[in-house]
Length: 210
Image (cartoon, rainbow, N blue to C red; front, top):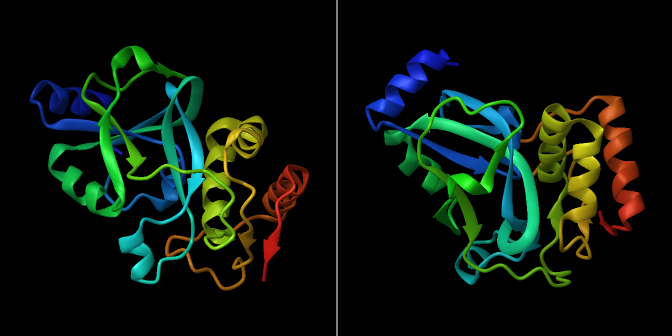
C-alpha cells in the first residue's frame, strides 16, 4: 500500500476517492484494484440487508441474494473505507453492478483510528432494497464466508456477531457451496473461523440449502 504522505498528495491534487465497504469490500483479499490504503470506520444512517437480484441480473442467471445498505436513520454500519485513485472508480462501479454510488457526508463517518486523507467518500446502495423473506434467492455461503472473515480481521469476533445479528433478511436460506464455491473471490477459512461463523449463523436461525 502507498505511504500516507503520498495518499495525502493525491488528495490535494483531486485524484483520490474512497468508498465505504460494508460487505465483501471489508475483506481486503477480495479487492480487485490496487487500492492505496484502508481505514476501519463506522457510518451512520444506513442498515445492511439481503435483497434479491434486480430482474436484469436474475435474467442472466444470477440468482443469489445481494448484500446492500439502505438508508435508515438511527442505524450504523461498521466497515472499511477504501482509498483509491480517482481513475479506478469506473472499475469499482463496474464491480458494483446493480448498485448506485451515493456520497457520504463527512459527519456520517467515524474512523476507528484516523482517516488517511480528506477526499470524497461513497457508499454503494442496491437499486432495489427489499429485505423480505425470499427463498428463491439464497445467500451464497462462499460469499458470506468472505464477508465474515473480513469483519473478523477488522473488528474481531464482536464485529462478526454484530453483522449476523443486525443484518436484515437472514430469513432466506443459505446455500452451502463452501466446498465448491460459486462466489468468484472465495476465501479459505481456518477451522476456528469455520466453527465461529457456523455457530453464529445457527444462533441466528438460518436455514440451509444443499
